[in-house]
Length: 329
Ligand SMILES: Cc1cc2nc3c(=O)[nH]c(=O)nc-3n(C[C@H](O)[C@H](O)[C@H](O)COP(=O)(O)OP(=O)(O)OC[C@H]3O[C@@H](n4cnc5c(N)ncnc54)[C@H](O)[C@@H]3O)c2cc1C
Image (tube, rainbow, N blue to C red; front, side, top):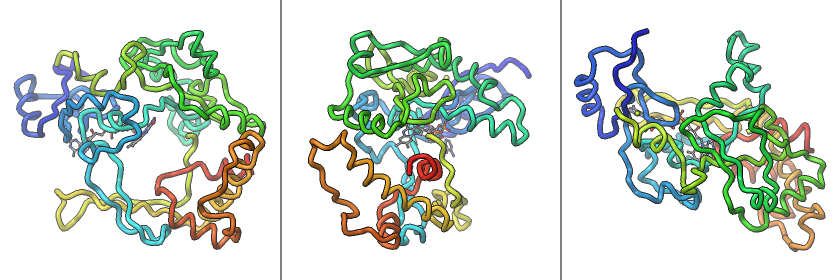
């Protein structure tokens, strides 16, 4: 492999990128299409450099800006009563890391180890951990905030690198969180001291992709482009969707078929989620809040009724329904 001559991210257009690439070299070992979270050598990026400073604000994770996403809608989803759903994929320099919830988590060791077991040496958790560490710098919270929000971490298990992505705990949590933590505790669900060290099981508290000094989003643009010279949980539904190019117009957006609940086992294991949510919300931890069920409504108790509610309201992305059913029911 030759030394790569350019470390650059092109944002304006494919043509502009091609031009820049031609100015710098005629051959590349790697060309990465899309300037998202994955690091890059020469990146050809579809989306614009969006200079709206609100991208940096953690509060913006609660706001959806259509201009930062692809305008793609799925095909009707039979498993969800034929609704269509938007496909949330960042179309912007920074990709998903510019629009995401900043929740900085990793899978469990067993997730990665399963890849290795399937015949991919080097893809187990312990092999990947040094690379995970290399990409991020973790800054612990102050003693005051650690105590206030019961933040726990273990740098030896999960961090220790000095990479560009900044990871830290925010100095603020929404009021009321203590109820939820108390509820998990009441159920005996443990909170790992450091979930990112391969223990992403239980009630998880993760830090954010957050600059500890400016308290702003640390994302692919700020880490791999700005200032650089030249760049859950287990999710195992059985239903399978597809993404195909539009054969009548390959330049058009892809045809996204989520296929949600197309496998009957998925709806069968999702129904107990509603039962569990009811049980969870009746825990002593919430007793003094006086909450009442709004949706699907206490009168919806049959499996058919719950299934119909799920098909009406379920987000067509994944949930860890298998683990929730087997461990928490
Ligand atoms: C709303 C939302 C909230 C999320 N919240 C979290 C969270 O809290 N925590 C978490 O860990 N993950 C979260 N995620 C998921 C996470 O952001 C993504 O998994 C991650 O950013 C994917 O990185 P990537 O590099 O694989 O792809 P992306 O970041 O999506 O990058 C792909 C890039 O390719 C570009 N591109 C696509 N097609 C072309 C083309 N033909 N030519 C040129 N460029 C192209 C796109 O514009 C994009 O910039 C969230 C995602 C979304 C959408």
